[in-house]
Image (cartoon, rainbow, N blue to C red; front, top):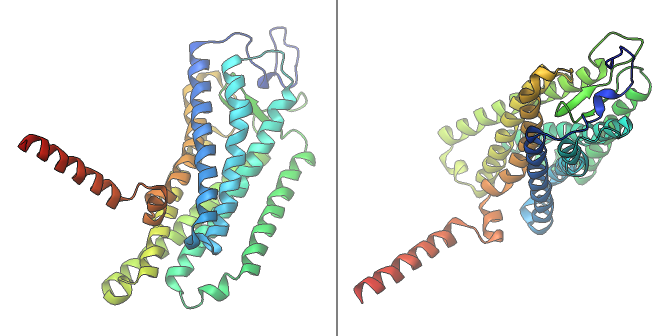
Length: 325
């Protein structure tokens, strides 16, 4: 990037402007708030999966791996992206912005990659229930998680092999921004573009698997009434529902990320802030879905519909008694 004297200053995209504005404070607070909530809900997810036997299976293992990725991606916003957006420090080392991107995207790519296996798991649980246990043994599940993590680590290593691809968090732009190279007029990162579109492609594949699962669910409900009432089938439907909702919200967030594509422009501050918060809100939605779609979880947390209804009935009865008196 060029400064006012047309002198190239590497990494100037990743430093603050030196003064704080109301917009900086609002955007920074939104990043911090949503990220703290997402991290807290993610940790709650891990606790719920640990405590509830219904998640002690391949689905739960994939969910844990994806949740760990989301927690890692959001935690960096709590400790870095949010605070530097509010404070706008001008003397900060640009390497911090690059490290924040690398850590965030590393965990985000793990979460994105693992989500396709969550969808695959639900599709096979509904479409091939008799083969499910042989397809998702403990050994196969562990292998999938380890191989996926190694693959993501290898892909992130490409940033160290190919020059002029670095991306970092730019507090002035409220988004991850391409770090321009002096010898290159290009204003975007080919590797960053590859990762953004690659994750979008995985999300599309997950949506297609969800469509197959949804078709099978409808078919079973229409043609096999007894199977549709089976508790295991109904639980699979709930697990599918929470997965499908996440895929839709993730697809919407990724569509905006692909459009922005880590390019630098002061005229797109609102779009950048919306994109950044949408990414965090998607993770928050993912964490909440396990509560919304599983009565076992709500009962464990003491917020089941039955208890809520009993409280309402008790309050109504008490009110009627006072009125009669």
